[in-house]
Length: 138
Length: 348
Image (tube, rainbow over all chains, first blue to last red; front, side, top):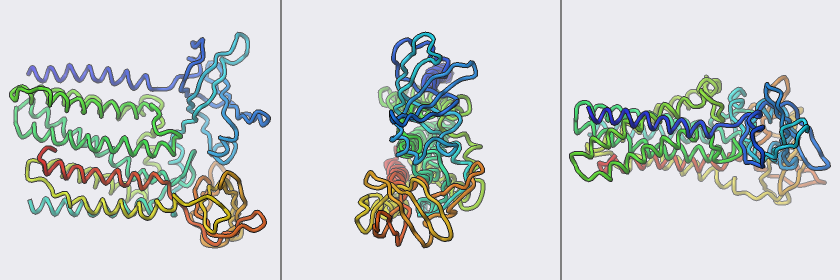
């Protein structure tokens, strides 16, 4: 009986530690970026509001937002994006919701956005792939 | 013993056959958000081996509880065998997932909540091994280690439900099911999921009862080697378009009146390519979001042809499967091999 009680106690402890580990590895929302006052490495999950291309700076700009009206600019090297995806952002390459990893630079007061994220990686879920019909070959 | 050996040999042969078929001709999503679509053939390796991991840890938990309630020595041995087997399958789950994620998610490790959950589960059961070997008193060791094993199981449902409870790059079961609901895809996915779990359970359950000879895993190892022999050489092909044969990435293109006109990237530059002949992929186009999409986009192809006036006139085109698939086939083959060995030692 003592061993069962020990197991149950340890199970609760492990579950709590596990939950904390899992929750801490989840993604921050755009609104949470307002709390950052200095450049910080972040992994952000956000709604894609708009995309812009700045060819003169070889940049692809994602405008990311949330339901509270917060917005952040996220920039990625255009040449790198085209090399990876073969085309500018479209419904085939980028979801309406995306996850990005990079460094967040907070903006000053009154700039309209919370800041800018220099994207290191665009992380893609595979959910949408399973909507596509199967193909064979190779 | 003879019946168990025959069953294990039969399952191993079927496992090998489905591994080979799934990696050489298994269907994959025709349009994917990122990377090479053939990387999704890992659906037939990574997902079944992860299901087997959950099954093995669940059986280990059940026997650990049985020991804690009834004190049966055989239950303790069985729990230990299933947990060891679960660790072997769990290591393969993590490794095959990383190889797949490096292509389809953009990075091998993303601290995705499900990834973190599975890693935590793996570490919890690894700590069980440390606990078991650190308690020297043979009267105390079974109780303490089984209590910890039962506790470690709390990480299993946690890791499983994570994609349902919080945003995750991992799909949830209904999303995967939407793709594997029919045809060869469903047959391969369902049979591999059932076979891998059955094989792992049989091998783990054979420990302490004579075990299963290692040669039973030979068909799977041979199948993995055959996949590697077929698929790794094209992956290693050069990308110089001036060579008679080269590897290129399909950036865009269209199919018209039996002619494929592709924009391909090779050796750091983009080239036009024309090809009349049997397409290397079927279907060649699909409708996505009301738009006709060429399914070759995102694929690496092996081109045999000549460069004429800046256009590659291709005589033959072949898909080059994602290099990680044969690697994952080999990683997977280590699972039945490792479990057979552990069963022989009586430790699994």
